[in-house]
Each structure stands twice: as C-alpha cells, then as structure tokens.
Amino acid sequence: MIRSKNNNYILLSTFGIVLACLTLPFVIGLFSLFFIFPPLLLLFLNMFVLKDNQSNKKGDLK
Image (cartoon, rainbow, N blue to C red; front, side, top):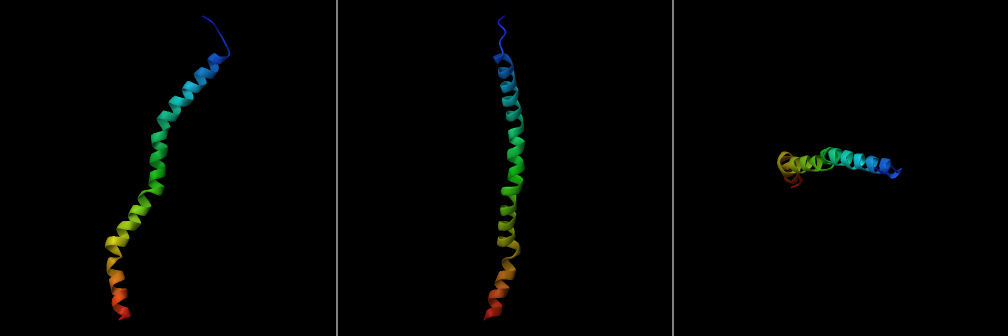
C-alpha cells in the first residue's frame, strides 16, 4: 500500500461532502421558513382576512 499526504485530503474532502449532503436539506428548510412562508402568510391575510377592511374603507370614502 502506497502512503501519501494526499490520503488525508481525500478523507477530509469526502467527509466534507458527506456532511454537506446531510445538512443541506435542513439549511434549505430553515431558509424556507423565513423567506417562503411569511410572504405566503401575508398573501393569505391580504386575500381573506383584510379583504373586509379594504371594502369598508372604500365605502367610507363615498
């Protein structure tokens, strides 16, 4: 068996790739909690909850 210094780098890079593959879905899920769900919540509030308030304001202006 031939020993070289590159063996440690190969082992370290393999460990890094495996670690990235295991943690990447959780990082994407964490970002989606902050960047996808709040705009969807605001859109839902605007369409259904605040719809009555907007119609009342338009009626008050007449």
